[in-house]
Image (cartoon, rainbow, N blue to C red; front, side, top):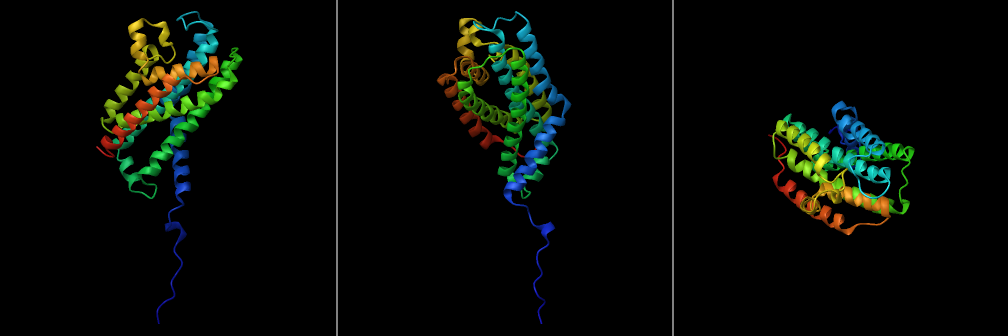
Length: 258
């Protein structure tokens, strides 16, 4: 007589795809928030920059109340820090130590890992916006609330673009190089990328060049949304083009292991 089939061991059965992605997203978000260096870049420094820009008179941020111009720029800086700098460094070292390769062949899969990373970035960014927004309101920020939806659209497009650029960098350069390039770009874009300092405060040639950079597009789009309550189509198009190109290149060039 043949033995009756036994029920599969539940401990050996993979969890549903949604649960796997959410569990990995919680882990990724927790890792970002527990990393002291990245927390400094993603939250502490932007908040300090907001207070300094609001209470000082230099550099010039253009016509209007300083706090109203500073808050959108600092939110843009927070998105850049989390979606690009933090994600590039984390992914680069995950690739170096073989974590990406192992997770890619696990039940989570490569697509599940990428979705989890995107969700983790959005969770951290939501925390950033809340903290920066509360500090801004305490400093007297008066946004055009009708611009929240345009700002949300620009923020999501900026997140997509910078995450794609982070994966492109992390998937093609060795981890040490990723660390150096990501931090250097953060410093350069902070001062000269049109993130905090509006590009219209620079000379004509520099302003024209910055108009085509995703950093300036993110900052300009958020400033227009919160100060004028409308969607600026030029930053929208710039972010769409950069996001599409970066996604295409990352999908073709990304290496899951060294």
